[in-house]
Length: 463
Image (cartoon, rainbow, N blue to C red; front, top):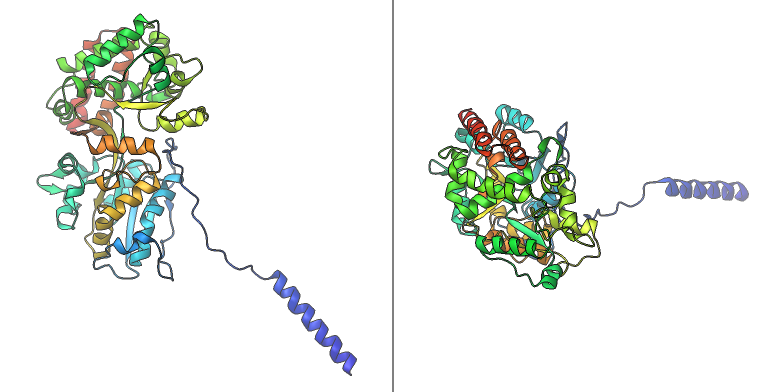
């Protein structure tokens, strides 16, 4: 009998051990992968929207040092916020990491939907608008004016934003759009080592830049790498360059008057900028490959040409993302020694791109979210995540690298900000502008090309 009992007990133990071995392992706490310090290249549009699961508050008390600074206002544990944006992949990971301190502190759930297609977002907004919308330009402010909540009523700390940001997002006295993410386009990349080797100094005025360019040509160096081939978007880098010339030659009020339609695109000031650009972009003494090189060199290759060994040119005008591309292509180069950038000389204000936040529902949770993103804790979280630049000046000094901090200081100290004209005016203006730039580089009549763009400008603004 004892032998039978012992056998039965042994069998039970073996079964228990087998079940334990086959059972689920202990659940590990997930860790967020560190976000890259440089901004990512533009992803392809997402065909279908991706719905994220609600971001749940943790069951244990948060331990982050900045948590006490998050003001939950009247938000209650379990409140939900519906959110739509155009970020995906690494970008979506970054916005989630930025929102995490708010979610953890306040116990709010965020239900987010991502889609890069403007038409899809517009359909959703018109059928069932989210509580909070993030859009890659400011145009929805004009589309949904009657539906948007005035930020002046939501407890925003306006002192964290330069007046030009407030003015840009205000319509008929209502503050309807706040920038959350921005890039500075008005910068020129160069090699400090190469400048030192030839005795060049960073120019401070437009006249200084012109003199530097002529000195480089006299020394037998090619000043610019200006290739702008980009498939169906060929010409967009030329558009950025011309807008910076307009900011230096005419100023931000002039650029804004083009965006509003008060100044036609075939104005004499625009012609002057085109003539300057075409003189550089079509001459092999001034840019790599002359007109053919400008038209056929991919825009990423144009960046690389300045930092190749030996360099093919001394400078390239490109947005902030160029820093990441330089590091990826030439990982041995050192920022500040082998590559760096300076503000476009003589510019009055800066040109850039920005994503804006708009609100459709005034609820306690939404108020708390808006307060967080526009406050110092939100700005610091955004900067530390390295999700490009926050226009909230409280983020300055908190970015993951000296390079990004330098761009942030340029934005924070700017006199004005003008969005990309093509992005802001809309179709059919953008395509017409790019074609005019291509025509100018090819040596066609610039005034005739600008007349065509001016017609497209009026068509776009009348829609």
